[in-house]
Length: 331
Ligand code: TYM
Image 1 (spheres, protein in one colour):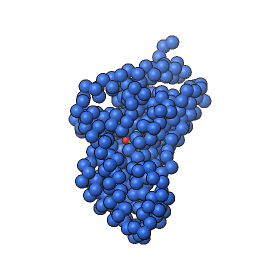
Image 2: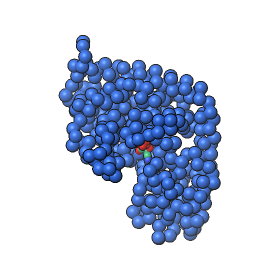
Image 3: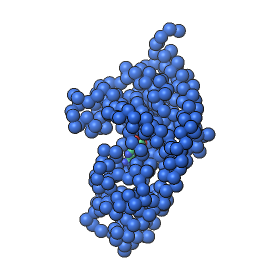
Image 4: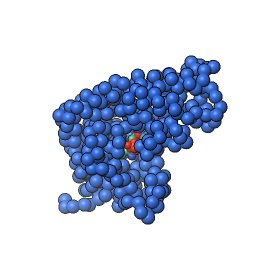
């Protein structure tokens, strides 16, 4: 089976530093190793309520971000999930071989439905992992770079692929998740026990790729730290500083032990100042390019049109095989 890489981001907001460190930053390197498809997964976004006008804005903002971080549209296919209707079709077909119990076990569903209770949660939220399996399997992808929070969904994708192959015939390769060792779960600056996310954004716990230098500095200087001082890496005992050190590693490329040496004998204040400058310096060229791409709507549309056409051609081939193996429609 030819290697192929697939990944995606939901256009629920502009991306944050967690998305960037956990997933996006890897993509720019991986595009040199694999043929890649990077999607803006709007059908996933609507599993929780979205403002329709903002959703379209965010869809283009995510596309612009892909380009701004260095994804090369000549190498990788960039497209909007809903513009390839085969995603929804394959999701339905795979849903018929997925068990309720398997979906009920998904921690993301449990977390997201907690507030209102599972009874009131939408069917889309429940079926979210099946659509994700469809995204991946539609291209018979083999490599899926994601943050740690998506590992359970990847396991389910693998199970669905195996079940399909056993029941209908060998079609899908079993995809591998690609999760990095450091930074797979970037935590909130205010709540180091929770992951950095859109929903934790109100109190400065989340850094957006679009934040100004001043805002980034303020958020980092106000980040909570651990009671035990010193810049040493111990994720169990000092989760707050461990999180900041992982960020520093990703912003500068410096290894954790080198960071410890660099800041030995120094306090949190010095380290935070250095981290703030590192984040500002790392994100400045990205946010500049982001503004350029966001203002060049024509170029963005052209890239997404080409991406959609390429993705559709690949998707049509898989779907016709799935239909035939499952006996759907006429011969
Ligand atoms: P989304 O948009 O919620 O997240 C996009 C990517 O960012 C990672 N991520 C994080 N990584 C580290 N620390 C964090 N705090 C953090 N927050 C988010 C996510 O793990 C993800 O890799 N369901 C996917 C979107 C998707 C997808 C797919 C991914 C839909 N279909 C098929 C891969 C393959 C998601 O969580 O998006």
